[in-house]
Length: 295
Image: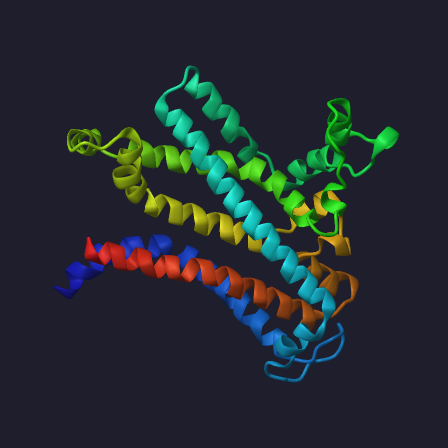
């Protein structure tokens, strides 16, 4: 019996063993090293660093820039996640109702996802240029031509981070559309017909049959968008650079490590980013495992 089990499991285990070792060392091992560094007073690149427990985690909240970056990240996350979910759902709904040239529209909406955040940011930096009147370019020039008021975009002190979410929505809404479209197409037609026979209107079919079946898709999209928004870095830097007005935790971490040369502070910020992403991902993993066991 033991020999049979070894023959069954050993080839597969040997096949995936290098990946398990690599992930263990370079992902979870590095995460552990980062948390350990965050609990030291290594605030320069030469000292050894003594263990100080949670002192860095508590002290970070005394810095106004940290509060600013967290507020920016929250605003960016709310606008980006809601915007991408609503726009992606709406596009998928229109596709599901049937339009001419669906394959072309699907490719057009999915294409932005193939572009890196850096390239997207460079294009949108020009589109959202804050120059006004005769110096206006991009969208401000268009607004001026059609009589709409011009805007400072990401330089606006109140709504700058909401504007910063627009390029991210443009890039990820096509991906969300593909998720929802697969969900729409996965609802059996028999269930829709049964609801119509029971007297449901077309809106009632979506409200009582289709939308409840799309909850797993919505949750998956929420998790994916949420963890992207919390660790966003390249898009912010490509659009505005390392400016206080668009500071987020990932940019603050870069400044702490590579500009201020403070490894412990950078590791502390990175730890907070990892923990915030875990708030999104861990409940989803637990829910997925329980769902598989029930099924």
